[in-house]
Amino acid sequence: MKTELAKLPPYNTAGHLWKSLLFCLPMFLILFMFLSGGRPDFSDIKFTVSFLIVFILFNYLFFKILYTGKTDRYRSVIFILYAVFLSFIFILNMFETRDAMTFNSADMLQCNIPFCHLVISMILIPAALTNSIIFPGNIMGGFAPITSMIVIWGLSSLAIGKGFCSWGCFYGGWEDGFSRIRKKAKLKNVNSLFRWFAFAVLLLVAISSAVMLSPTYCDWICPFKAVTEFEQVTSAETLIKTIIFSSLFAGLVVILPVLTKKRMQCTTLCPLGALNSFTNKINAFDIRINHEQCTQCRNCINACPTLSLDESSYKTGRAHFTCCKCGKCVDVCTKHAINYHIKGVPVNKAQSATRILFVFSAFLFLAIFASGSIQMGVYKIINLITTGSLS
Amino acid sequence: MLGLSTGTSCLVFCGPVIVPYILGEGISVKQSFIEVMVFLGSRFLVYMLLGLLAAIVGQAFFKTELYGGIVTGSAYIILSVTLVIYSFLRIKPLCMLKNMHEIPGNQTDRRTLAVPLVGGLVTGLSLCPALLLAFTGAAAEGSLFRSILFFVLFFAGTTVYFVPLIFLGLIQGKNAIHIIGKAAAGIAGIIFFTKGLILLINYFSI
Image (cartoon, rainbow over all chains, first blue to last red; front, side, top):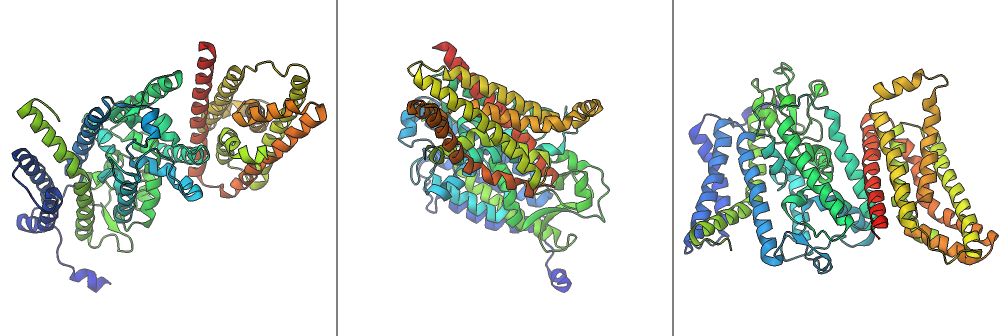
């Protein structure tokens, strides 16, 4: 084993221009294919401009990830843009189809509610027990169908585990963005035990959804209804629901991330985040600490946005299974003691190769998942500038 | 049949009360058996009283309207406060339990059984659709014996869904599970409080 690892070529691309460019080539080709749909048609100037902006941005950021050796710094740019543009496109779509951000009972009866990945944590048990999906959305076809979202989530879970939460979730970017506003945290030393709260939410919503055959989290709690769609206020019940999700959005997505520099909603409330933690168990990648290089400076603990690193991590040499592999801890470690790692490989071996393998898989997933929304958003903005209309 | 067919919906009302409690306490199978029995016992007591009430209502005031909104809403609010207090008492044992341990007679032990006792009483009083159906059915029976028997069978049918809760004690021992249980109790409390609030608002706005 040692001999085989020693024979591996030097994968360290940081500071190596030509090597970084060479590693960018596969991403360049795959992105070109996905963004152009395989058959590029550049007759529409607005499409061409939006295509070029997104294509260059994505390739530039991937190059920077390889060339600088920093992961989170450049990942977060796309991640945040993705969240903002997806909400922009989504709300625009709602206004085009319904003239409002709200939906009513008729939309639910006609199964016109777009499906989001958070619902997956609520539909699994009822689907197994009753062979039915407890969500008023399209199984296939239409806007955001159920099947495609489940397939994407399943494949990403296999490839990057809970990395989905930092490389694919189109809500996470909101908190990620707000958590970066302040240079230093106003509220420090957040108790890492708060990470278990999301599991309590998962427990409750899984039981209640299975028994009531209704996605209770979406119905009552989900704070991201504030940036997508929500039920029309027609009664005291819907009014209270609106107050709940608005308060949760303001508190857990905006205020607390700004004050703590942590992704508090992802950590304490998201049921899919809790479920995704278990996918880390079946995924090959994790984050490990090299005891020989670690000085226990706490930089990684302070940086971790999901409270997945604490004092116990120094003893075990690994992040907790709630880690979403954003790479922030890897970026801040001046001793290079914490790294991406492939299970079964010795901790201090093949670190650069492991990082490139993970970053390539994760970035490719993010690029494929996010590029369409960002490109469409850019297209709409160009349209607004040139014609004065978004549509 | 009514109990068996509607038992799952009863579990939604009562499950969130007892599941987080058992998970949060860090107790053995034997202890959780006692906890569940206390919970079910107090619930049974309420059902017997409801059976008695149903008989009286059936014989004398069957057509009188029940103020379900205010009763259920109040029950939810009382229950939610119980849950939230329980949750926060246990999450911060250093400040709250420390003082309680100083009281002669170790009142924390008494409080441990009081929670499932109160939980059973209050959830038994929560007029969920299934219980209202049972009440209507029992009242329609027309005699004291038949009304109480109706509630005994209704209790038996719904209790089937609570039996697996006893074995939750088997997965004790991990700090994380305790925290999840406590947090779930707090969240369930907030949910019940909200539901109670909505019911009361609806009741008073009519």
